[in-house]
Length: 460
Image (cartoon, rainbow, N blue to C red; front, side, top):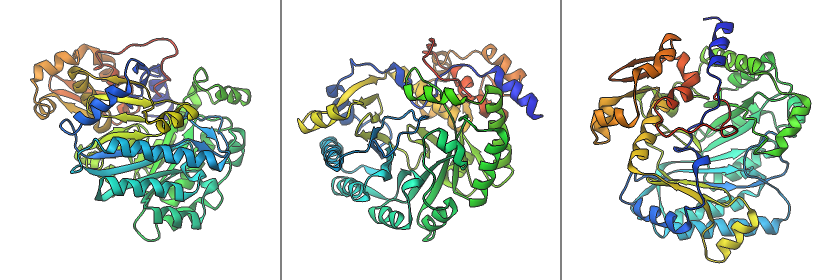
């Protein structure tokens, strides 16, 4: 299929819809869910769901705030405030970990932000040391950190490795200095290839390179040049995030409108051509926006049908677990609930210092939603769902599952006619082209879907 045909097809499905990072999506969280509700879920997590533990620590500080950013961040100012925050995070972690069965293993730790490497690595080491003292760390645990390469050199990498990190996600966003300037982001301190080679020099750590498409001053040609340069560096994984323009949520994004954003048509061409280039140059497409080398665990998990996803991105079922999250705005993802902390820095520190939790909102899932969540996750991660197999794995009746999902073959007529899915009474299989619109396909088995103006970004 030619690029113009693909773009036309994808534009047809470029509508507002959930990202399904969580289910139900985070905009359904409510303040009726309290810290007491969260504690109940923490304790019940010992006997329900995946027993592996994933930990997320949010570091909300940035030396400079990028205009495209949709994350919870604060301008890095006084060192004293950083220390207060880290102390609060460790205190929150120790309080929650005291309610977790110590026989459970930590298989995944992720530091996000903000910019975790904008602060001294000794602060991060304090947190990791606290984890090791309170919980059992799996020998193959993935300990990952999101880094801005503007604040990364060889000595920084040595310090982070010494702290325990074995996966580095470098937020490149774009190699073009003009693009970085207009979005208020600094350039990499060292050549990116130098950083990647040094990180992988001992064979113990792996590297992701993250990019965003749909930013001002980007063109199809410039984005393809990003992909060419990235593929030559040969990171273990590449991520191409679609810029989500939600200025009604993040006011700073209005600034980008002054320079002008690429049209939906141009943005789709970036997506298609980037996909073509990477899959023709040594990478396997994983999920909606990830690419991995064939020997990477994500590519292997996709092949074996064991890919998973949480708020931190794609992972394998081996490394994933119920997510216990700490720090400002952090979202815990437990068997039967989600709990999100306050987004106000002072409120968070004051609550924790006052021996209280900082849960601001959350959501408790009923049994039906737990099943739907698993079904949508299976479809979006592994691009298929066999109803009989899924029902057996979840100890439910197949007919009940299909009724719960409100499965109706007629809902997939357009998808089938456009070559995006193969559907039968036994299940759904997403084609390679269909992976671009898997969010739309998932919406067809979401019985609780609500669509309101301004609630979701576009699906592509």
